[in-house]
Image (cartoon, rainbow, N blue to C red; front, side, top):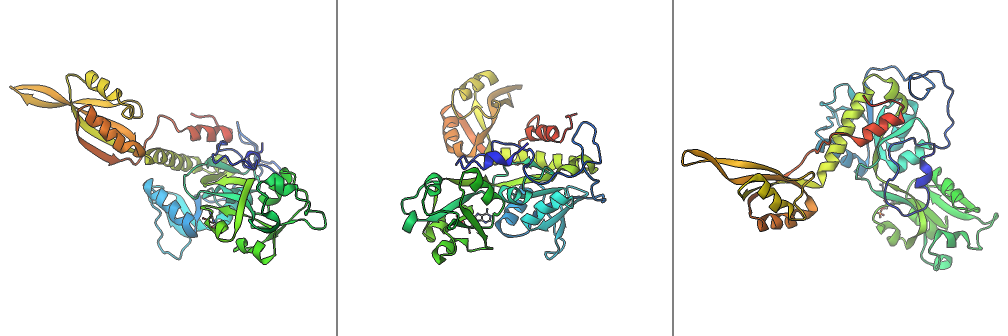
Length: 388
Ligand code: AMP
């Protein structure tokens, strides 16, 4: 099964239509020795240790964004010593956190030295090279967004070239004088060019400042990560139609072998996955409570549901506010509780007022746990286990 293929279509679709599955294509598959009941046959034992290990990015923006997300999921990473690479998440006993370069996380997942990792999808695609040992557990952690994109100069022979097709058809590229592309993505780059029918291409690698390569005459084009597009613009470079190799964001990846064979790995994965999913579901929502005068819960619900932004996730919770009047318990007011998308908050408050709402309270949400975690079910299917 090839998972990378669809990402490398050159389309500009920014979504991740392919959920947690094998990052497969050309890594050599190893010999099988160990059979797992109701699942794939694996090649070797996992390295012996009792702790579960997760790798987190040790550098740059990905580090802070990853630690922030985990903290928001009540999974704060505690580093005993800032200079040490190993840390703990107190809520998850038996989990070791290893702060590593992203590409090393991918390599160590493949070798079994890490069991879980959070990295950019670009890194797992480039360094995983389709290794079936890597399983995508959560494909959209909603940060680290960027795209791997081909860019060419705005000037000279490229002035009127605006698509990959036009670039491919330029008569300048021959076996003797191929298109020279500077990139750090030496696996994905050639694969993309081949899939898009560009025959005469050579690649050179560089560790940074790729954007300068065309101006220096070292390369004709670059293949690099683009986020805001500012760096390209500042260097007089442009992206072209059909030139996006993949869309990326942070993802949670696991070692297939660890999930199947390492005691406790699946339970920790489930907890992290559930917390991530429930948190990411909650991020865009706030909880709104208000009091509304009414004759019955049904009558209040009717009024609330007449407003387009007040239906909540499943419908409003309406409960009587009880007070004592003339010696008897009575309820003139009802408290309503709904979840509202943050973006629609002000609109919702206006609609609440329109139906008689007062004392509106707005609280942030940490988690929204649904009955089921869809990604968990898919993960079990992927590794050949059935849900309990
Ligand atoms: P920008 O100007 O925002 O498009 O950023 C482009 C520069 O930032 C290039 O040098 C890229 O190599 C680098 N870059 C952009 N996004 C990422 C990312 N997610 N991870 C690492 N480097 C990135």
